[in-house]
Length: 78
Image (cartoon, rainbow, N blue to C red; front, side):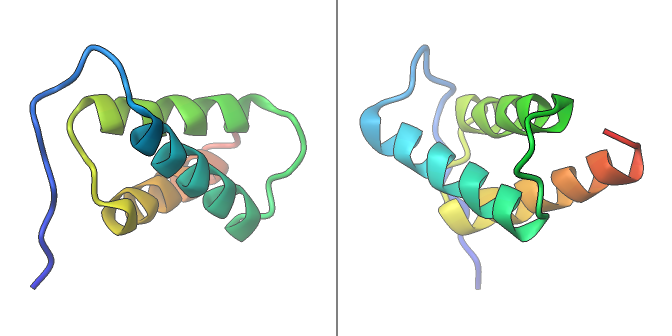
């Protein structure tokens, strides 16, 4: 059974949360082979940060939804 770790939306992110965001971001970029600077990277970063602000703290869940979001962005031509 998968458990999602959620909490009330914060006003800022702590060091552990920023580490989660950075790890997820780099993993998704590498997985999708999107290393060039382009609008995709900014949109992906904003998505990951917003999910953290929305309360998502499970790195595996965050990685999965960010990867799906990245694939959707690619299909849309981002």
